Structure formats: C-alpha cells, structure tokens
Amino acid sequence: MNNRIVPEWEASHFPLYTADSIHSVYSTSSRPLHHIHEHLSVLIAIVSGKGSLKTSDQVYEVTEGSVILLPAYSEAELTASSAHPLHAYTLAIRAREGASSLNAGAMMQKSEAASNSVVYFLPNEPAIAAHVEELYVHRLPENEIRHVQNQIIFHQIILQLLQGQEAKYAGSEQPSMERSIACLENHFSEKITREQLAEIAGVSSSHYSILFKQMTGFSPSDYLSRLRVHRAKELLIGGSGTLREIALKVGYKDEFYLSRRFKQQTGASPSGYNRRKFERVAVLLSPYASHLLLLGLEPAIIISDSSEYVHTSDLQPPQSITFININSSIEQVKSLLLEADIELIIGAQEHLDLSGFHAEHLRAIAPVAEVSWMDMGWKEHLRIIAQIIQRQERAEQWLAEFELEEQAARSLVKQSKAVNETITIVVIKPEQLFIYGNRNFGYVIYQSLGLNPPAKVKQQMDKLGDRFHSIPVDLSELGEYAGDRMLVIIFPDIKGSIEHSETVFKSGHWEELPAVRQGNVHVLDLDEWIPYNPISIRLQLQRAVGLFTANQ
Image (cartoon, rainbow, N blue to C red):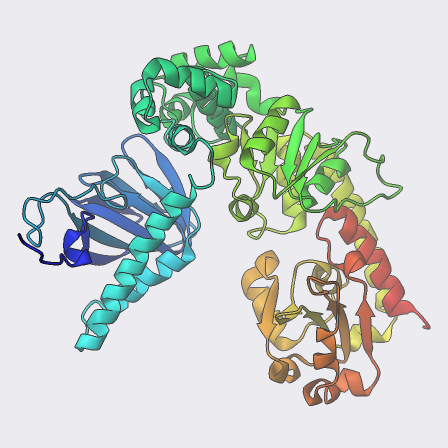
C-alpha cells in the first residue's frame, strides 16, 4: 500500500499561468491603427489616451484604465481617437491545461482567465493596467529578485481577473441564471443562442426560458431584442454612424432588419428617433437631475444616495420624483425602472462604474445616455443633456441669461479688494487636504468672477480647463498655495464630526499663512458651496458677490 502524501500543489487540477510576451503599443493621429492577432489569450491594458477596440462583431470604447481580455486566435484593431494618442500594453497569457507533467494523467480544469470564448471587457481597472505597465518596465529583470517580483505581479493580474469575473456572479440565489443573463447583456451584439445560455445556466433549453421569464419578465429573444434596439437608440441619440453601421454594431445583419425590429418594439421607425422629446427619464446621481429640472423636465427616477436638487424661484418644485437608493441591488433597480416605464437613463460612466450599475445591466430596461462627469464642465453637461432631450433652445437661453449675471457680478467684485488678491480654496476632508480648481465653487471664483488663483492652481487650470477639480496636498505644502484670502470648506467624517479640521487649524503650517495672520479666512457652508450643477452655481455666484462686497 502506498502511503505517500501528495503535495497540495501536485494534486491541483487548476491551470498553470505564464506570461508569454508583452509589448508596448502607441497609436497617434498619424498612425492610429494597431492590429492584434495572437494564438494565445491577450490582455490589453490602456494606460493613457482614448480610442476604440474593434473585434469581428463589437466595438469597445476604451480610455485610461480600460482592460480587455481577448480570447485566443482573436483578431482586433486598436484605434486611437484623433485628439487623444493612445498608449497600451498587450500581454499574451499562456494557460497550461490538460495533462500536467507534474501529475501525469490528471485532467486540468479550463482556465477561467484565459480560456473564455468571448471578449472580457473591464472599462475601469486602473490597478490591473498599472500592474501590466510595471511588468513591461521590468520585462528584462536584472536579477532573480526582480524576476520573482514579476511573477508575483503577473499572478496578481490573473487573480484580479478571476476575482472580477467571480464578483459579477457572487451573492446571488441563482448565480448560474444570472451569469447567463450577464453573458447576454455583455455580448448581445454577437451570435448567441438559447442553447448556449442554457448551458451556462446548467439547465435544459425549455426550462431555461421559463426561469428567464421569471427573473426578467421577458423571453430570452425579447430580452435580446430590447438590448439591441436600446443600444441602437443610444447610437442614434449620439449621432453615431449610418443606420446600416448601427445595425451591424448591435448585431443585426442590415438596416432593414433593424428597422423591422425597431418598429416592432417602439411602433415607429428609427429615422426620427434622435429628434424625439423624452418624458420618462431616469438619472444616475442627483446633479443631472438638476440639469433636467432646469430644462423643464422632471426626472421620473433619481438613483442616488442624496437628493441634491435645489428649490428656487427659478424652478417648479418637484412633483413626483422617485428616489432609488444607489445601494439597492441591480434587480431592485431594474424592476423599479421597468415599472416606471422609463424611456431613457442618463448617467456618467464614472458614476455607473462606482455604483456597479453598468450600462450593460440597465440597457434591457431603457437606452443609457452616458454624459461624462469629469471630462467637461457644468455648462457642457447642460448643453449635452439639452441636446439629448431636445431642449437646446431653453438651455442656450438660460446660459445667455447667466452670462449677463456673471458680467454684472464681475463689475461689482471689481470694486472690491478681492480683485487684487490671490484667492485660495482649501477643502478639508477627514483623510486629505485639497486645493480646489475649476470645479464646484472654484468655477464661480475663478471663472465667473475672474479672481486670481495661486500660481500652481492657474497652471493646472490652463492645462486641464474644466477637468481640473483639485490637488491633494500635505499640511507642509499649504504655503506653496498661500493666497491673500482663504476660502475653506470642511467635510465631516462618517460620524459627522469635524474634529479632524483642528489638526489643520492648530498647526504651525496653517498659522504661518499670510491670510491666516491677517484674518482673511472664510469658513463656508459645505451644502451651499460644493454642489456642481447650474442651479447651485447660480446661487453660489450670488453668495460670492455678497462675500466679496460686504462692508465695502
């Protein structure tokens, strides 16, 4: 009898991963296109810029932090946008499966990370992208320690991929069914059959249809049709391509088939869709609700953790907005959106990622119009949302009136001492100090009123424009941003305490600041000065005029 103890690593039937090759790809406007064709699975990590990745039947919009895992033998084209050079790394991954030389005859399980037959797209995984970049930088290790570090980093990448895939389906009473639905939502533009979905769910085809209808309220074919037609609506709203191009992007063979499906679902042809006015709109997070209210359209649903809209004489008080807590499950959110007969969902990709409510999850309910939060300022937010809901004239009229208010405010502030001062905006949060720039009430101070920022802030404003939010600083760095006048906002901690601000106010670094010594420090109310939407900006402009012209 053989009593030999088999080491755990030898008994494992899981695959062994190795990095086969890694390359740097840089695409510019002069050389925007890069072809990818590997016999192994390829991980593509975007470390800067913007562009798109086109496979045989899908196009993925990519930006810094995007990660895509292509199946073996895939062909793809990585293209930079005309305005943003694209820097990416491609990492070919080999997974040793089948009989192991360490344990002859043992059957290895299929690799979850490198044996998928579909594209795995992660729109925002900067940690994985950073790991891939580090692997490239140290691709030729100078010693064994660095070699081992590379192995650890490589397996951290594999671990993060596996955890990401597993997290999508964890915590569900019916994980296999949800996994199949997620597969359909992520790959609706590809050829996918009910039999394939049933196999993922581990049930028969006939039973799968019953379970699917119970979970979603739709048959698999109707659900697929909704995903495709709603994606077509998104592309029509954005003016993205011809009807034929849109049909191919969403998985239909031509524009005629798309039109037929479109009419079946909506009762109208797609040709006039992007000129329609919406009535039942949902927004993800409150700032965009304020934009809609300003444009005269009350959102039917706000998915948020707060109700940051403002009651003013400019607006009709909200009548029937439904709030959905952002911590609700995706199933709850989808059910409420469906029940409310939502026609359109407006949200920022950044907020979608943070909430876990990706466009792919919500698209079966209604088309999702993505309006970037950080890539533009509040005026552009307003213009884009107005264009989506066909209320451009109202937006431009409001903006023209606001610009007159800005001119009048500048004239008043020019008569104050503040016009010759440097103004510093300091935000004290429990974990960090920030110097604010062009967003939140920094817009009013530096843009509307044209007051002077610290030199380092101005450098970032000139470089990033409306995208410049803030600079994290240490206490010891405050002197580098010292102004003649300091505007201070304090964020409380999770328990509501602002005790952490005393660390700042009692420090020698703070007491040495010229504005502190001269008594030119204003501690402002968080709720009055931080919200970033047209209504709040207008109120902040009025408050700022009062702040700088008092006692003149």
